[in-house]
Length: 95
Image (cartoon, rainbow, N blue to C red; front, side, top):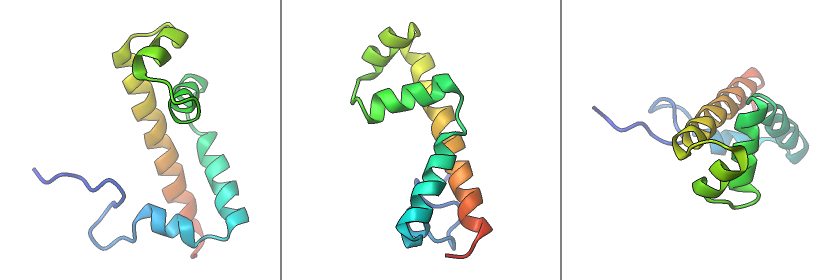
């Protein structure tokens, strides 16, 4: 089974990060904000605690009153939604 590429959907696609960086800064900021609104409040909180506060999974689990497995699932699902939204919005308009 081939390993999925972290930043590419298909071998011929331009990586998501490259498409995003081609956007003007104002448009890029708006698209990222829109994408970050997609996850549920719990998913968003787990993502923000990990990315902005730099907390470990154990610390996030303690704050959320959840187990580490649930924190991993929340972050994975939330990040998948963010990526899906970014892909959708970046394909909507050529950059």
